[in-house]
Amino acid sequence: MSAIEVQGLCPIKGEIIVQGSKNAVLPMMAGAVLNKGITVIDNVPRIQDVFCMMGILDSLGCSCVLDGHSLTINAAGLSRFSIPREEMEKMRSSIMLLGALLGRCKEAEVYYPGGCMIGKRPIDLHLMALEKMGVLIEEGEGDEPLRASVPRLRGTVVDFPFPSVGATENAIFAAVAASGKTILKGCAKEPEITELCRFMNNMGASIRGAGSDLLVIEGGLPLHDSRFTVCGDRIAGGTYLLAAAGAGGELLLTGTESAGLLTVTTVLKRMGALVYAEDELIYVKAPERLQASSIKTDPYPGFPTDLQSIMMAVMSRAEGTSIIEEKIFENRFKTAVELEKLGAEIIVEEDIARIVGHTHLKGSHVEAKDLRGGAALVAAGMMAEGTTIVSSCEYIMRGYEDICRDLSGMGACIRYVEEPAGR
Ligand code: EPZ
Image 1 (tube, rainbow, N blue to C red):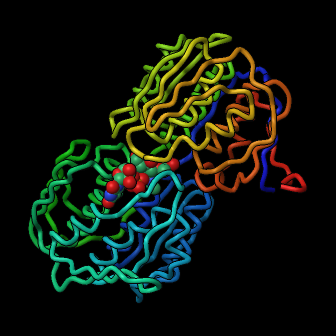
Image 2 (image 1 turned 90 degrees about the vertical axis):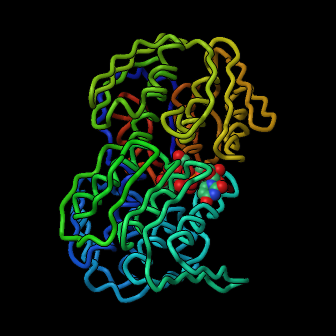
């Protein structure tokens, strides 16, 4: 099944307990490599990217077992530090293993990571941080891997010019293994980073400043076996809140910290929705039609770039003209073309999209181009008259455990179907 069929305009009312966080669990899986023993992670989402990361860890000599939503990683047997290109290119998170393998093995051979084609997505900030800790890096030409080695990782001060999520995570892994103290300045502050700090500290690391842009890490401490429950997926939860609001429905979402979605719930209120949020509970009830608004994506605590496409879908049916400024990735408006097939009116000029809201969208056959764009098309299908088919939904499976199960839980008429012939 690689397509999703949505019957639009079904009444939306229900409750969803959100899955575990993709963008928290993937770096944790890499971090588990630093412990020469067993790490158990609970509430792990059964998504493609997790299965892929398990495959990479197994290929390095670890042993991963996912029983339900509990993942046991035994990294005692890790015996390789080289990851094949085809594995690296399956997702962006594979690059997290660079810092983790350097921390464990003092060397690593990797290739540039894959992931959603939403921009160039270089790794210069990852390499800058690692080089400051003494890592020698040889960027391969052609089919040659990037080779990194370090006789001895040493604590230092790293000042990030941009709060890169992945670069912060790689620097954390290297700093935990380095001898001495490391100070990371200008770090990313996403809740997934805070969660990673809690996870590493639970394993014996000493990371102070979680939640801020300044982390102080005492390196070289002995790490031990541990068990940790990963937080709910903020972005999946935000996807469902926006989908419910866009469809004029109501949703009670539990399982993810409402503070991590404050900018999203603030915008929904501005657009006319009733929102109640407390701890891990968010309730939204939308009017038949929302009002237009404007957003600018920013590093946390700004509006999350991962919810930009879904917000674009919601704005397509709002009253008035909305504005989206995408300040994080230089190519994250691709879904606009697919939304226009449903009747949306979107004008894209460089990093600004203007969305002229229309009272009606009409179901059509559209294609997912990336993970969050695919989710946006499903949300748009819920708001459109008639039937919408979203092709290439394997993108969606990378990050959503079961988007049809979840959205059906709030009344959406949605199911997986075979890819229509001739696509
Ligand atoms: C993480 O990607 C997330 N992925 C992304 O979610 C998310 O969109 C992004 O953070 C921003 O929040 C995971 O956690 C697995 P960045 P990452 O490094 O680490 C530039 C999803 O849909 N940059 O913060 O790759 C980069 O090009 C995914 O779940 C450099 O220039 O994000 C981008 O423009 C999509 N040099 C910006 O920074 C670098 O060395 C943000 O990248 C690193 C990044």
